[in-house]
Length: 259
Ligand code: NI
Image (cartoon, rainbow, N blue to C red; front, side, top):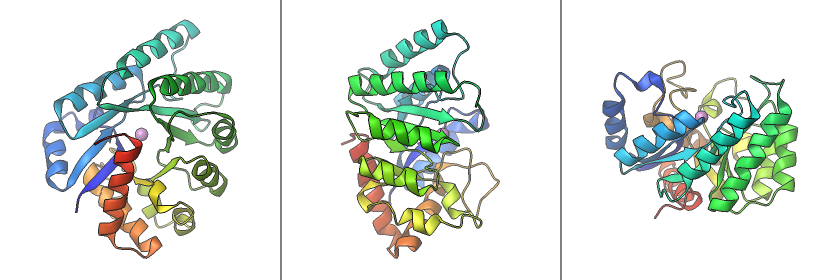
């Protein structure tokens, strides 16, 4: 069984002690492609370094709502750099993670919207999908999704388990990426949310090193745990985990335009 982890962070300092070893162990375990996602200018640069080192790792470039610089001059200069980094690099498969986060930052909604929209424009110019991070911002996210033209269908990374959001994304042709939280014991609506998504629009991810799925909740996460997300989806949909692995692998190749 081969698996594709659509979203993790191997530039994270939690991997500083054993990055190389963990990455090789992940590949050898059968997770034969994965995305190490960027979330700031700095991590986008590191993501490219990692993706250039390992044939089976891809990356994304973007500024998350929690990594927006203080001045508008610095914002614009970083956005220009993001566009340059993402241009003409076949290992950069999306612009992200980008979006809204009103859990950690609710004082700067206007600038979050500006940075999000500017990066959607970059993705459209480069013909790349966007990878969305959204937290406590369901309404504003739905509004953007509904009212924007996208060159490529995007991805809801670690998608919140919200019916309206999932339905808006599915309608727009977006991919819904499920992560560890669907395996949590207190995740009451997981089965319902998983079944809202057409099978050819589902992705699986870990968001490593965070959000370890059950039975490893609380420990450092790595992409080997993506199998627990696949198992949960298989159980919810009454399918074989091998089929879920295969389908989500193909879905990821399609959305990220990987041959
Ligand atoms: Ni992430």
